[in-house]
Image (cartoon, rainbow, N blue to C red):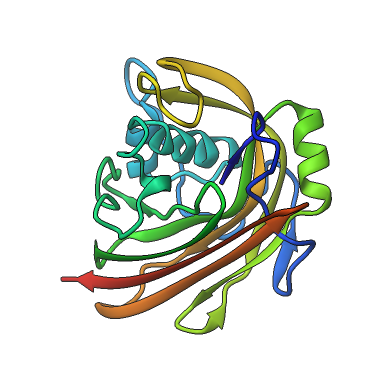
Length: 216
């Protein structure tokens, strides 16, 4: 993942094999359908636990998760998978890229969780997203088999971060636009699985290999 404020973005290469081009409100096969609460609007994590289908909901929830911890405690900076369970919503399981470079992580995941993974993604202005997506490309593989990707253009999102987090750098909500390539993987069967993420945009490159154990 990348921030618009970084010189080098966290995206993909160009359109990867298996990518499905969609607009910002594409809903096909997405993991979360949103339901309204009776009173105040749900938080990003609460909405994710319900299951959202709107790209703005998905990206807001994921970015807020990525911004929920300060540097060195952040899931995007996790070098081993030790922090992959921190802050996860109850209905899905977020996977993270990196701020650049390669990493291998091991995680235990409840067997009934849909896996949500950005291949490369960015938050910023519409113009930032347009430039970013021109060279965005990549792949996600589950157990060696390529997963279809969603391609989301600039979509309004709200990121709620903690103090000093490496995503927005500020505490509280930030309204921007989100974009990127995303994978929505239905819950894998119980047992061991691998997820490989490869992405690039411009000069930026990332490679993430997950060893996941889906638990009963």
